[in-house]
Every structure is written in C-alpha cells, then in structure tokens.
Image (cartoon, rainbow, N blue to C red; front, side):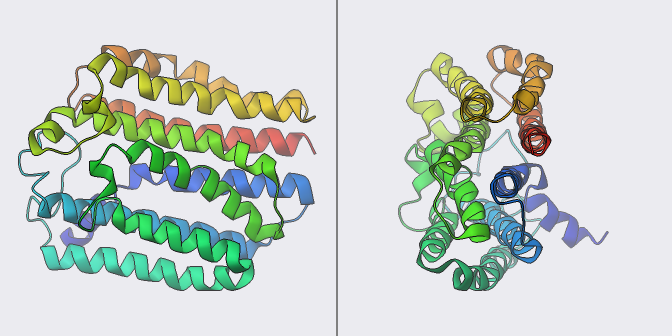
Length: 296
C-alpha cells in the first residue's frame, strides 16, 4: 500500500468506526422487526453517509488539534498525521473537506427521501462533525465530547436510520439509541481519560480533567453499564422474547476490560481498553440485532 494511503488510513482511525456502524445496524434491525422489510439501497446509503461523516470528523480533529497546538506535546493516543508531518496541512484539510462533501452529496438523496426531519438531522450532524474541534469555539474543548457522542452516535443515528426506512415516528427508537449513545460516550470518556495530562497542559477542557481522576474512571464504566442493560430489558418489557437478552452476554465476557478501567495507568495503556470497547460495541449491536430477528 502506498505510504500516503497508509497515513490517510491512520488519520480516519478505522478502529473508531464501529461507533458509526453499530447505530445503523440497530436502527435497521428494529425497522425490520417492526415492519418486516428493509430498503437495501437506503440502508447502504445511510451507512455510507454515516461512515464518510465520521471519517471527516476524525480528519477535522487531526487537523484542528494540530492548528490549536493541542497535539504539540501529546505523548499518548494514536499518531496524529498532521502533527507528525506525515501528511501536509493542505492534504489533511482536503481530505476532511472531501469526506464531509461526499457525505453531504449522499445525504442529499436521503434528505429528499426523509424530508424536513432528515434535513434537520443531517445538516446538524454535518455541522457537529466540523464544530466538534473546528471553528472559533470547538465544542470538544468545553467538556461536551461525551454529550455529543451520546446524542449523535445514539438517538440521532438510530432514529435517523429507522425514520429513513419508514418515514414514521417511533419513540421506542429513541430508547434504542441510548444504548449506542452511552457506549460511544464511554469511548470518548476513555479517550479523554488517556489524554488527561496532555489536555490539561494545552488548556483543553474535558470531563476527564474537569472532574477528579477517580470520577473520570467511573464515567465510562457507568456509560457502559447503562448502554449494555437498558435496551435489552426495555425490549423484553415491550413484549419481545427473552432472545434479545443474548446481547448482555458480551458484557460478561468483557469483564476484565471493565476492571482494567479502574486499574490501568492513565497513559497509552488505555488504548487497549479503547480498542476493546470498540469491539464490544460492534458485538453488542450484532447480538441485539440477532435477538430481535430471533424474536420474529
């Protein structure tokens, strides 16, 4: 593989992309459970639009953290291609603009299908993709990272996916979205915990450096607990068979990862926990979807 492409691949942070894939899977699965049909073209375009937007967000983060000096003395976390001069500022800027523009183009068709609801959700998601670390007041620098991850990788993504399939409102879908929302927030919380010292030094405010270290360790664990348990039991309460509780199994299998949140040093060793939460999120989504299909 050409070196340049390797650097672009690094910059989009492929291990984080499960945060975008999982809510789409869950939204499609619940749509199929309720309506017994799926529009494959719209499903594929929804996934493509989501992935392009997330890749663009990661590139925006790489570029603007460099421009604002946040990555200057960073000792933990993934390699930042702009800071390390692996790609030029111009190349990274062109890459994030291309991803967000392509996401917008794909989204135009989805907006035509979904009308005002998807126009609002789509444009607000694109705006957040840029404003998260871009612009004069980057939202991630004011302790909003976990909240934005919860909203846009949770209720917004799951509801938007479901709505595009059926064009109707279903309050249950908002509850379903809390599962991936909490898990995405946990990913963000671990990321910010790992970068706590570096962010403090650069003046970037996150929940991990607003609160004590002890509290900062509890935040991702509570998010994982809520994200793992609320939805399966809610679906059983709504009348789905106990098959949906199969999604709880990986929570038990990843027990050591949850314990490591409280014991690992606050440095690059937390990258292992980040990777495991990403895997867990995807497996959870697949098993929750399987449980819904077994309920048909």
